[in-house]
Image 1 (tube, rainbow over the protein chains, first blue to last red):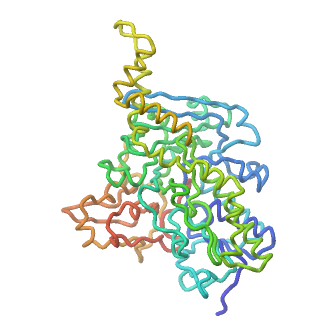
Image 2: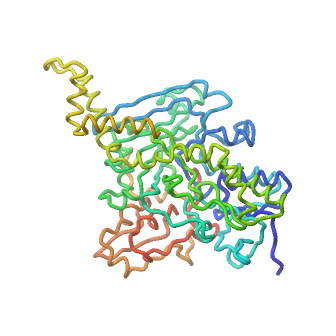
Length: 431
Length: 94
């Protein structure tokens, strides 16, 4: 049987893969987008929000046709410690109007839509196919093997997610260490649209995003997240796999504890769980980045470790989309020169360097290390909640002015003033 | 909200279980020598359980996240891949 030959084969119909497929198909290339799930998006999961800029650039006003949930207008960061919590809210009403700054999504719907856009543009989308291996010729990647099927291409784009077995098979990615990734666990909780809007003080279709830090992870490196969809809430925890390795807590118990937490329970009261999911997050950024290109192959999205977690902001999908775009452009450049070697595909690196993808990952390259500081998950939430507790408690005791309260709380936290100053300065510099 | 068992939670999900081929296979003799057995608490589907020092594992409810593969301290104990095309977890929300 003659092997089919494509201009490009893309492994994985997530945001990176589908974006690359869409852009290449639009240029008239023969593109095959392979997805192991029965439908695009059926294997994909994330926290719940996408920053819109990257896709808006490629498909202007995509929200008019894409299945999006709510535009986020309200950001909340909550520190939790036992019965106490301290939240900081930020609201930008303008984010509720086009061009929406960020949108909550459910990936099964959204990814299926984006893959359908690629199909509409002329890409061939093949679902339910697991790619088992790469086909090489003289050391160059020339195609993929899926079961008995062999399919050839000038270039293969590995957009197969955080566990990128393809990048590893190509010799570009190494096995990551437990400190470099985090386990995300999430439940989708159905509630009526009105209940959500009322509960989170949102008007109409506006949405909220909330991050939690403190004892929701029992002091382990990680945190909680909540995103409001139209008629459901995405609620979950992210804990570094390195912390889980030595944990005495089961992550599934942490998740159930989280829902019972007195600061969370009222937010989800009356809801019905409709899905329990999990996914790894490539948190180490540049420190876990594989080689991005080789002879006949490019790596994009989560497979390339393109995630940025600054503690107050978590991004991945906009990086995935921009890297899919850069990959598509690199393929076009390689075609123009008819050179699909490593050198011919090196435009990819250049394009990424010029885009926000590498600029931001480089700028925040020390963030993962800073975020790993255990004080972030124990001492600081205790300090802040304790201080607020002192400020707002009236019990007829002797009066202590604010400065005194601050000092006594710092003393109690055992962090030390110097340490506090150093952490504060470091955080402000690195994040 | 009522606390749910992991069996109840997995029962809500949609799976197309591949009865003919396990995508994750353990070498139980290697697991037996593992002290911490982090898979038993790190798996978000709670699929690794320990009974009388022996690990048992059920691939049917796997969420395909890769946590076990990452936290496993014993080289060669877990042979991990994705289920065959079309099989495994089917996220309806994601």
